[in-house]
Image (cartoon, rainbow, N blue to C red; front, top):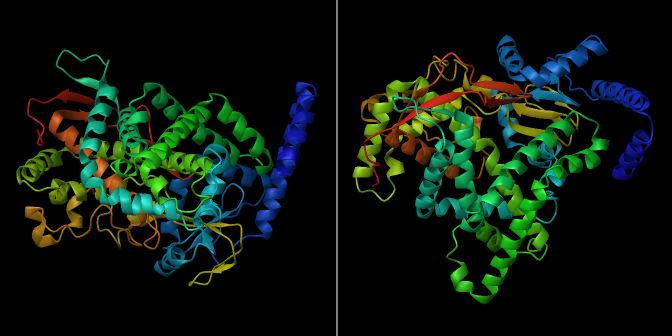
Length: 525
């Protein structure tokens, strides 16, 4: 029904003159924005501090500020209100920020039927139109397929996948530096975020899709383009009336045809795997990638349809491609800025690889703590535990949130709270060690993958990111390769490292690092 209305509206607009069309469009957007503001006012949260504007124009200006500078505003209000939960207008609803420990705990522990992660992500990412038609529905209501694939099968096979990840890291470094001209003293000037994307895209394609697609330059080009198209389509549709999403999102996704190309390649691969499993079931179990594990984890007829398998695989591949390069870029940037840890980390790496242990990553406590500290000071989003309210929700501190609004934990402010992390702006990996063990780098208190209400980088303790162990191993192996194979430094220490888009904190494309090959050998060679 919505799609029919949108198509009818679009045909009316395109059959008139450009000036008239623009007038209709502006009038519609004005009426829509007025309706949204009235709806937000009627449906606003109660019994909590609230950021409100006194006029229509002021509200529009604030919405623009929300798009371009939401993180600083949230950070400021968190401290100004002394950790009291508050609400502020977002794009089409109120965003509630749970700040007190009791409200954070309640938000983290609320069931999906009351505070929904899936509904919040559907509104934000427009899965149906940007992820091959994927929808979170009764086909897999509890995300059992994705959960088993990532939390069980991928995690338990990480040791076996280590060589695959290492090869992907090496290929990513080669792709990110190949063709660049060295300076007379041997330095390469490399765009940091582009390098991070090359590394994570190569590793993700090998681990999630297998070598058949990962080794195809044609597919990889389409996959990179698809990831960009999906983000652009989702963000544009967030700013417009939802009635236009069924028209605008598909138009954007068809501009390059990348999603269709990626889906066609995945479909062919899945058909091949299904045939292989029917003909040689014993041999198929030797496959170590998420395509195989998704097929094996799909137990019902609805989950095993070809369309659903393609959608599930494509959605997981997209989810893995978005935030990992950001985390890696920030970790490398942290190494460049806090270079006193470089030699300490190199010594730890050499000792761990020289110990003869089957999994040397387990003994790299300082590297683990370094990643945790980098994530603390460089969260990928100002918010975590983002949920959509489906039923009236009363917080322990008394605030009442009507359905349709959003609630989240302001993780950037929380991770730099002096009451939780003393000297919060100081980069100190050793804060994660027991004091008496710091000199020997032993017995790290918490690992990079650990989750708590005071460290919500991975989401809520009740429902954290199921792929965090894979992310941790990949980032550690990428940093190990960087530390052992290259000397490196930031090209411009004064350059800004990130920009804001709504609540996301995105590495700048312009940030560059200098790399020079070292003479020492890789520790595992």
